[in-house]
Amino acid sequence: MNSQNKRYKETSLTILMAEDDPDDRFLITRAFHELDIDAVLCFVEDGEELMHYLFHNDKPADSDCSQPPALILLDLNMPKKDGREVLLEIRANPHFRELPVVVWTTSDHEEDMTFCHENGANSYVTKPHSYTDLVETVRTVISQWLPLPTNLS
Image (cartoon, rainbow, N blue to C red; front, side, top):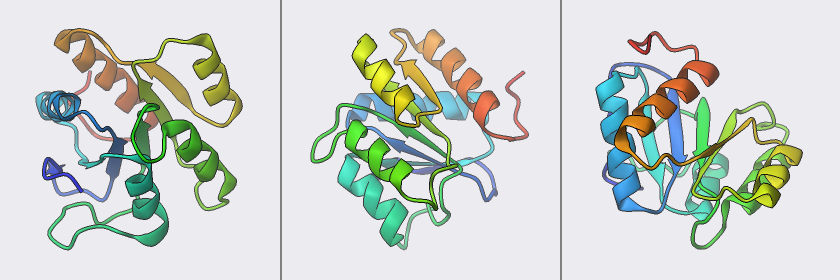
């Protein structure tokens, strides 16, 4: 589990982000902090780590990531197990079928979008190119998928 896991406020909601790029993890953490999002943001670096988190409760004892996620932000192109495989496994398990999964990726390929929507992704977001757009995209995604009291308006 990555050391950039952050607790923003005392809350039971956890957002799990599968992201292998350290720069992207840093910028997402910064955007969450800037938006004062009332949730625990946890990172995993690959699809295998995400599946261990979900299915085996594999969370470090010193981590703030002790709750099941209320939302998954899923990168498609990761090592070990990619986001497409992860999405299929999540949706095949009855315990996680209703868990919101937002694909968060650099891919703007129509076939990736179609695959994700046909296989249960709740939303598909192409990673923004500027930090300002990133903050606005995070604001939109979080306000759409989580019932958080935030300063997002």
